[in-house]
Image 1 (cartoon, rainbow, N blue to C red):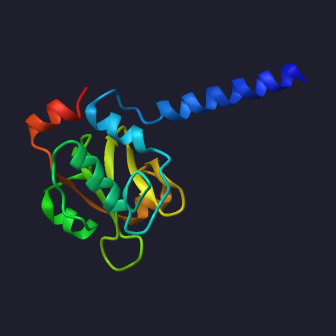
Image 2: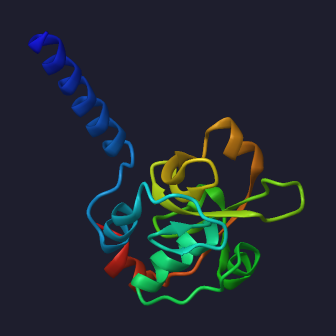
Image 3: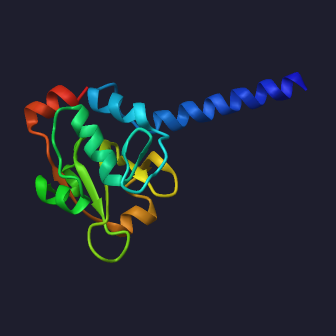
Length: 156
């Protein structure tokens, strides 16, 4: 029994470390702020670590980096300069049409095809832009950090 329990604990530890490594990002200020709220539950109109909606999450993260964003995802899309998907860098906002009525979801690109967001079903988490759900609903991206801000906050 003890061997089975040890094997189960080791398996979970390995799975957790692989999932964490899946973010494929290093230890920047941006990463630290995001990592500090991963697992926070989804809450409609939520803007704090007690619960976030998608734009509440992005606003919170950028506020911690001293960058002000508008509160709603559609307004955040207009706040930055547009970026081609092939030119994404960590800290760019990525936008999706999840309800068929235009921009309705936002996340933060973290590198290697991954983004962090507050999912209505799973809370703050990392997902792949290439997953079928998000790839089909991807609208575009906006850069809200200057190159110098990126260098100091989001690169590693």
